[in-house]
Image 1 (cartoon, protein in one colour):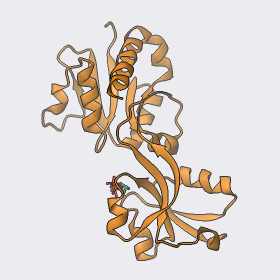
Image 2 (cartoon, rainbow, N blue to C red):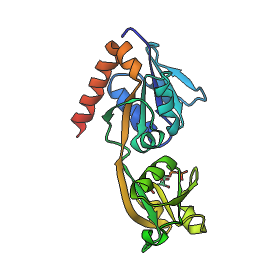
Image 3 (cartoon, helix red, strand yellow):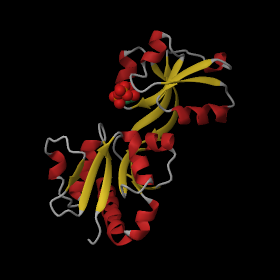
Length: 213
Ligand code: PRP
């Protein structure tokens, strides 16, 4: 290993599994597991550096090359539309991007006025443009399911993982848009300039994922 490799990892639901895969590759992740408020962490050898950021920021760090490799959900990649290589479907954090709302909501009844609450504003625009349907998108940053409950929106576009949040709020999936899972992304320049380091690592991760399936 000649050059330092920087990983951008998503805080939250992807963090634990991301670290698990890196450890399986033989990367010492003890610095990550120790409780700390440090934003940049290095392994003992100094060959690997880790930054933990908001999931939606992972593709930005990787696109700008301040991180060489990132782990992020396909849902975030679709929303962010960043210029990065998406190399491996890591197979964990499986979920579905869905339209959801109250049972029997007639999506076509709202041709010109359907209000859609979502964190995935770009995905929503693309999806409804593709259907040729005018909608009003209400951008939210969390607790999206509240939209129809409090009358802020008619429906939501959000990820559904276990389905529990919808169920406990008497909502249901109205349409599935796409299946998502965690992806390994790589900066386009790093893949060339650090090929000697990154390609074997990517190969190893690929092998680990395939052996798990
Ligand atoms: C996500 C998503 C749903 C929920 C789906 O929210 O926005 O609310 O998880 O998961 P489920 O199908 O397993 O119930 P998250 O927990 O990330 O929190 P947020 O509301 O702050 O976005």
